[in-house]
Image (cartoon, rainbow, N blue to C red):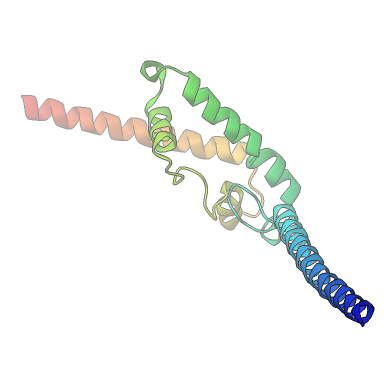
Length: 159
């Protein structure tokens, strides 16, 4: 009679332990499956979207060039290190502005759903370096003209 109770108790505990072990193992496997799915989604998102601006590869005619050259993550990282190493007294106004944003943790200086290639391509179908340099030259001429106007206005006020 004691043998029957011992066998019953042993089989009961063995069955309960096996069921609990199966449940715990299932939970662990499901958790790792979810982590694997999340990692693959992140990897797919990094392959199909620019990390810096967040635009998808369908927006660009040459997505790899955009990610590798125009919005290269390591160029931004190098710029941040450069700003942190450069003394504040030697920084330009733009560098001071960006450095202040970095110190406060503000990421508004980074491109957010913006890319220069897209704004230039909306104006003209094929924007080349020559086009960009020409636009910069035009801006410089405009700024020189406006600066001269301001100086003339200040000189007239002082007279």
